[in-house]
Length: 353
Length: 175
Image (cartoon, rainbow over all chains, first blue to last red; front, side, top):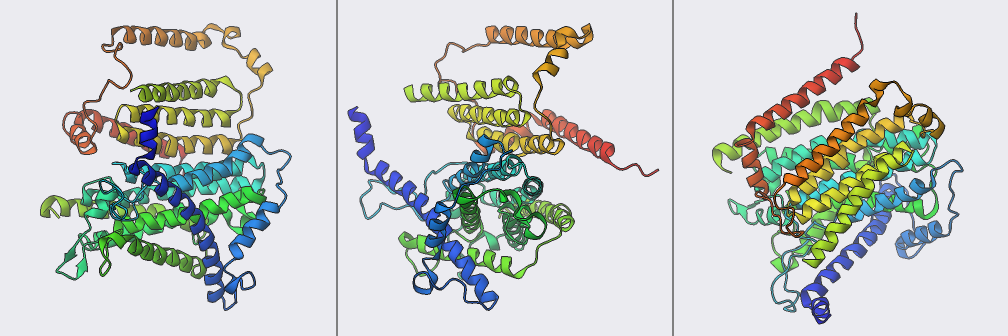
């Protein structure tokens, strides 16, 4: 028993538990911040005020929303499949939160000298991290599909079917863009991929993967971000919940906290995709001016910029038509990603970049 | 090691129970979900064998891609729950003899399995003592493209044939 107690009070264990808890909380808070940002940005773009009554400038609006959702009645259609109807939002939220586990968000730290050796600032340092994220995000589709099916409603079912078709189609381009970077970095571990992006080309251009084997890195970045938006079901790819056609898509029959879990999952997924893009293409926590130990500030800056980009896209672009979505994914994005992969493979092979 | 053993039994029972539930209940959607749970159990066993790559690929390919298609099909066709009375009427034992071939095949498979187990070396080893020869991803890739090149290429040709066949079958006839 003494061994277990020693292990539990070891600084490494405490640090690990602290990081895990912080990431878990930060993801929930980031979802609330994103909801507020989304409403404020959309209001700005449509020349409205947005939320401004709850708290200064309406910053407490997300909390008011959550309180409202918690106290709402939890409805369930009579013909719904009870077990799966309850499980679907849980699967969605769980996959969204778990996907952040292998994402590093800062340089290795001794936490002000409290730890005997530096530990990476991430929940789980897995050597196949990139694939783990890919696997867990692909589990998220089950939440949506099962929500669609178990509701026993035609709109929900159509939303669920669309979602699975869309996610399968875009996973290919997503994977191809990922393979490009994995090949160039020569590692599947996100920590090592970020570490490979230290330093500068010619002393000015940061050695980020977005600039690597120009222009293949840039193309991979664009493909990955586009497919990432499609994977998270955000506009202009928000087919599973196209209001004009499907009422609210897969979560038509959901209310109260179950509905909130879907929303939580959507925003956390967005943050995760932005974090992965930051690590894969934008050098993670590396940046000028700040010392290495404060790299997480750079990480947050890059993350917020990408998230703002996603909001911007949503409120600027109209939704694709369904056939356009499919032909864009299969006939443009996938071939482009494949050619890009081959070109960068040739670059790695012949120039040893 | 004790911890490894506990995990082994947890994952193994998840895999086996999931597999049993696939055929042990009558709702086809639940069958699809049970097999996904079973895949997660298998993936856990791969991690215990220190093959994280295989474990993750198992999830991505089987649970993430193939089973989504299964679920898609089952949902789209709206396959009804199996009816016990209907099942009794069409039970293999009440059908003419060609229908019973499945039973013979199953028996043959069980005999084969027992035979294979009885000849496998290292069954007496403790849980967690077996280690794979290759675990690093780069090493795996090198093996795949040198020693197992033929099997790799033949598999890909097989998949292409299946894909072309599916397209030909599904295409609208234009004559």
